[in-house]
Length: 429
Image (tube, rainbow, N blue to C red):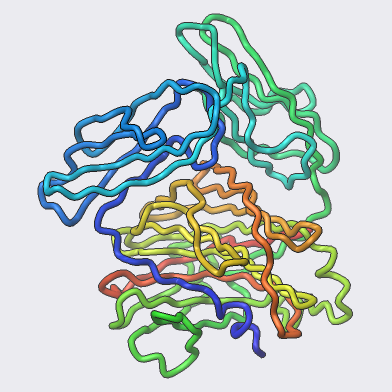
């Protein structure tokens, strides 16, 4: 079977050492916000023993704010329009680094909903992301909530809302509303069509048929055996640590820094491990939506460089890789795979996992022309709307199918490391 030579050959898993990082939690890249715009960020450095001296905010190359220390919490008043913003840190040794954020400032009053789009088709649960752009109340916005068919299903404090809403299949009339401290409120209606009949492939971590490959710089081609410099193994049916009593342990080590290990499982199509061979090629053309959902256990976050969660689809000469990696020890952002240019790009949203159990949900879509839409990523209950589209890439192979992948990247010392997967499922429709 040649699945990995086609499904994985272009993955560039290398994560260069980050000597200083700026993690911006607000605003996210591409976000539409009201004015004043809040900037929340933290910075670290391991090149200057004295640490970070100060942080600042640039708006279109103009320095607007500076605060001392390794964290920043400030607001900048901006007129409606699009802006290129940068959050930068300066250390006590003369060094500096920065993180860019492109944002749109709206003049709209009331509630700005960035996800889901009005009249869009969504899965369930659906990601709801919204901001109360402005309020006439001097005390500001008290809370925000979501109604589904006139029933209030979720409320959270503050002027930002970020949640998952479970809904039944069919057309749903939803409303996102804000309430201020003066007794006022405003709302934005969002009508959605919830796809029904999704098929769930469950407990994939315990499935047979997993294959694994080592990868090295600079080309990161798959290496199945005699891969001197990287070691790996997979132990299934682990009862501890486990949520279901049937977790799988993934181990990585070796001597070559920043070496990677990829585990892949063909779930639909040729060599399907789920009894879905699609031999007559009638199933894959009907599949347009995917939800990758898994719990993962981190034994030592300080040495876990990158964890990656992917869905691959190949049919009719088109290759589609929805690659999602948490660059934990790099820039601290989620990266997504740009198929057309064969490169990782920052999704512009933060990614930091913790020691112990974490939970990730990734929602993606294949559009009518095989374009890959990254819809949202939810990590440990916090959802981020991505809404970016990339073209597929051509392949000469006739291989036909869908795979799920999990990958661990080694750190600068290729430290021996273990993680666990549990309750791993793929939903498709």
